[in-house]
Length: 382
Ligand code: NDP
Ligand code: MG
Image 1 (cartoon, protein in one colour):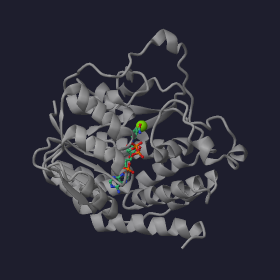
Image 2 (cartoon, helix red, strand yellow):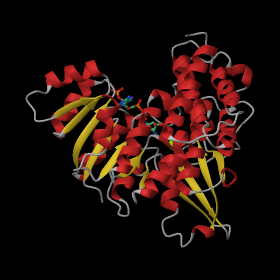
Image 3 (cartoon, helix red, strand yellow):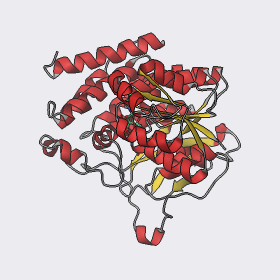
Image 4 (cartoon, protein in one colour):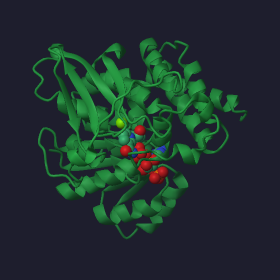
């Protein structure tokens, strides 16, 4: 079991739930990092007494430094600060729960410093999967999935004698708030409509990704890297109740699933206690109260992002980085009322249609930057 965390994205949905788990398990936290929410970060610093705190925004970091000058904590900022938090000697695991591509360099820094990772930041694996996994392998560290579907697969694979026994994996998807709607109906949906997820309470970006099915597309790419499977052995099934968190199918036809309440405390905790299990703060699952569990095929016509991610994964190179960067900006613009909901899918679909060779860190960052710029141009911004 892990005992000392460096937590990046501590003020977010996954970050605060990771601290719930750390509190319940009696773990130490040596580093906390956020983007700019220094009010919450300060109260976290006062509770956890980390050695290092990082605020990405320089000005906010200066304010925090002044606010916590009574405490023996260093306050750093920027990417350099995040990478320092990711390689802190005291930590035996880096929990990467920042949202978006900004998580890539800290993930690499953690692996290069010999740290295991509890990884929620799926954009990292989507955009730079080959580089991340190569860095992880080279340094002999491990990546423990926090994403609920990948944690479910990881749990179902415990005790699997050999990888050859695995036929395929099945990721479940809630289908989001718009499952069953037509393309026509989606033209007029608002950010408020899209932020109403039926089963999970999450940060805004991933909630929009769930509504477009981009989240499931990113998860297919994530699963491919985590479990070493090609795209055609990763299926997706829409499961409205979010009780079955994912499944594996073995060559004999046996399927194993992991079930539980829709509560991220469970996968977060397993990433930290593996191979052990500990009591969780999550409420237990009452199957009788769940009643019916329903499964449907995804609607790739109405929601093009999932198929686009599959295409990007098949193309490889920098195409996944480009679609991820494009999606991040498209989601921001949609939330600001500057793009329609269907435009997100259109943008991602177009971006997935080109193979862009490359794979070094610089190339990934460039592809990300270019994709973002081209989306801003499409939206008529500079
Ligand atoms: P939130 O938006 O709730 O939180 C994001 C966190 O990242 C905040 O702490 C934020 O700080 C921090 N952050 C953002 N940008 C930076 C930056 N440049 N430098 C440092 N910190 C930064 O997101 P979620 O917790 O929902 O999601 C986090 C990740 O986990 C995403 O990759 C998501 O896809 C994944 N995930 C989330 C799930 C969930 O249930 N929420 C489920 C599965 C995966 P600040 O508060 O200061 O802005
Ligand atoms: Mg998920």
